[in-house]
Amino acid sequence: MTADAKTAGASAAHPASPPLTERQEARRRRILHASAQLASRGGFDAVQMREVAESSSVALGTLYRYFPSKVHLLVATMQDQLQHMHTTLRKHPPAGESPAERVAETLMRAFRALQREPHLADAMVRALTFADRSVSPEVDTVSRLTTAIVLDAMGLEGQPTAAQLSAVRVIEHTWHSALITWLSGRASIAQVKIDIEMVCRLIDLTVPDPEA
Image (tube, rainbow, N blue to C red):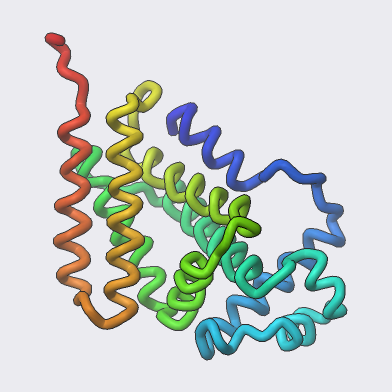
């Protein structure tokens, strides 16, 4: 794992805020679990703050102190899902020979994980789409986690170059767009795979020329 990926992952897992106590963290975990469960059953509209509070055994006012809106809650739920994904990918890293192959494999594994919970995936993506400036810290955390996952998959020996970071951003945009088109029924899994593999070839264009 590169130093940049470590930094991205650490920043995503621990945003700049006072650390939660053990009890507060347990409460937050219950809230996120309830959010994911409700979204899995009925998508974005099924996640109602009052129901989340009841399912997680917290007062409604307490829930709003943790998450000011449903959008904040669902973006945090996506962050939580990505953290789980990142942990799994570290334990079972991609086996591709090139950085491009490893990133494509990683993103397709993440995509298939979301495919198993289409209502949850749709709810989280809609929350990201609806997010305004008040949700910027949470959205930034999701972005940093995604970047950390891609950088880990690339397996760089040193710091990523500016060109490599640019390629990563384009790959992330394409992956997000592919997820939206699949969720809306405008792209098949096969087409998503083709697009992901194609955009990951950008990584090959960023390999520094040893003779330069």
